[in-house]
Amino acid sequence: MNVECAVNFRRRSVDKHPPLDLRVERIERWIWGMFRSYHYMSAGLHRGVKCFGALSEGDCVGFCAVLHFPHPKNSHYRIHRLVVLPDWQGLGIGLLLLDTVGALYSALGRELRMPAMHPSLIRSLDRSPRWSMTKRPGVFTTRNRPAKGRGVGFMGGRPTAVFCYVGSSETLELARRMVA
Image 1 (cartoon, one colour):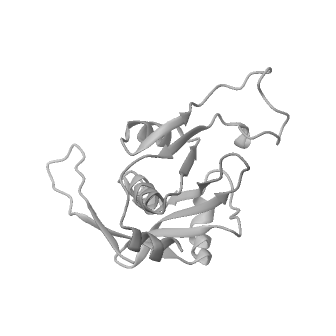
Image 2: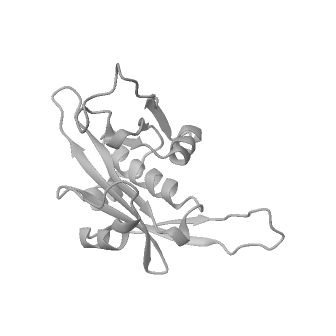
């Protein structure tokens, strides 16, 4: 499956940057080994994830893992890991990867959530018309702070925002090939 997206960027410069051609593809989980040392929270990867990559000229520069989150009241899918290699950060690759994966899951009628802890990622998702904030990041106090390592909202001690994908969908045929 090839979803090709062109990303053009310009940063306070007279020189024009060349367009960046990216493809989002389903990738093997062993590719996580290239990205694990760049994830700011944990190098672990759940064994039940489906992995997607942003590829530029055959090189994987972005990684996204999706995990099914079964729940008796509201079963959904969530982004388990999102990493862009350091040399490629700041170009919008992470958001492009999230939007593409969100469109695939939306086409299948599946709810996709993104728990975000990093302040710049929270700002980017909050500005995006494709993502809706379902839980605002809060400040832990002694009253609402769970015991260390326990509780859903703890996530390593950082206040976490949760976003839900609300953007447009990919075609059903493409989504079935990529996700199934």
